[in-house]
Image (cartoon, rainbow, N blue to C red; front, side):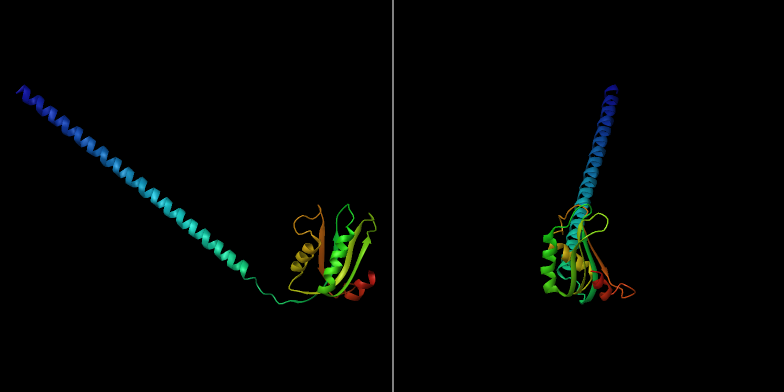
Length: 176
């Protein structure tokens, strides 16, 4: 009987061990499944994000390829090009004059010295056909070579004439 009790205890222990092992294996497989699902979910999310980013890039390139067509109109602008603490190079003036000869309907430009610091700057008035003064300013910077690597502090200042008081073509050109 003692032998039989021993074998029953051993049998119970073995069954418990098997059940524990089975339980551990089930936990491992569920963990592995969860990891696989989480990896798949991450990969799916990454793929979706990549797809979204690619779609956004395509939309941006489509927008870039199809520039908005704004009708051009005549703008009368006052123009000042200067570099604080330095003289504007004569070449800037020459490049601007050559470009505006073909682009502007009318222009009055001067390379003048300021009253206070006696530094050369370009001053003038231009009547030009464009869709906006911002585009005109960008074009002028390209023409004179300041679009990306202009002198430190250099500025191209454009202001539309308002036709009030002295802010008209006649008054601006008389002051030149």
